[in-house]
Length: 257
Image (cartoon, rainbow, N blue to C red):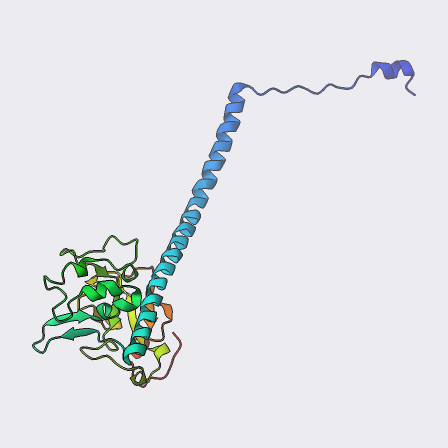
């Protein structure tokens, strides 16, 4: 039994007051900084990838808006003229005159520019030259550094489907027997841009889309269909499917892609 006298002799052990030295504090600080740096190193590729994906999605949205404007213009043109515009017009002697993008200018809020163009003279005639040096915003993507040709003509980042937008004569909607929602009218492209006024700004989609072709966006292209809707397709799309989507009256069965 412990008496009161003995209890008074038992004193609690006082805790040691640990004060880290300057060198210990420095080691702890360096360790924390190293951990932060290591986490930043490990996560920076993920963060950078997310930033790139976000940027690509934003850019794709801008280009998709451009193409929808083109689709609406083509649709309104055919409603007014009962035919889609000719992809390119030529004189009887074969001199190139004008492109499909010139014809739809009034339908992309560029009627004033359209009225200044002499349609009886070629697009690159000196009398027309200054008009075709004007950039039409919905014909280009704003982040590209390729907006003008070496001759200072304004470029287009979209090319018409020459199987629909044909030479000298437009195709009426009734002749798109494969269905407007399954017939390509235009696609974006990643290089070899033509001036928007150049009648040569048409091509077969298969000559623009493919695994060996440069694209505006990673992995594929935006396609504008004749009914006005826009869809992203892989640049590895089955060549036969792409060919079927390019013809307005090929009679191919509708397919998923």
